[in-house]
Length: 35
Length: 177
Image 1 (cartoon, each protein chain N blue to C red):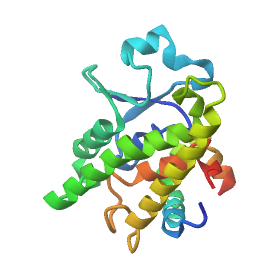
Image 2: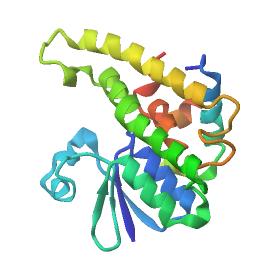
Image 3: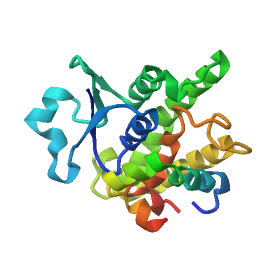
Image 4: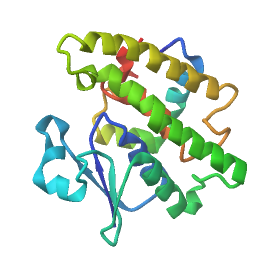
């Protein structure tokens, strides 16, 4: 997915949002450890 | 209080994030798919389809399907400005949510759960192979939608924003490429 620059940038912007990180932590998302 | 039934690593991440972004008071109730809780008698009374997400309203009514739940949350909390303010952007939001639900999500499910879409025990690999191409094409479409924009509809975080990302945030998504 790294080839998709806009999509990857969306992921980074979302991870910068406190509300998103709070939910990912609650769901114990693997994306937090991968980020 | 609103109550969201969600399952980690699924598309219920979108309304879960949106409720938080909206500043809503809500209870988050996890449904454990590994324990098949979505097929339990208690859960089937809430949603006979055995799916997540479900948003239970204060009066007990139940909403299913992301398009409906996301729209409800965005309109219920206008102060968060999650629902577009002009007609053209509003219909673009509906169009995007419909495409995610009717095209992208099914492609994703064929890719991560191919065995559900064939009765042939040896057919899953072929389903997965084709689904990978279809899903990759969808991701390219999303990437194109985001050209020159911070979020799907422009510079503002809206009702549409969390959904396209759920596919990569799920437990299976990163394996696409």
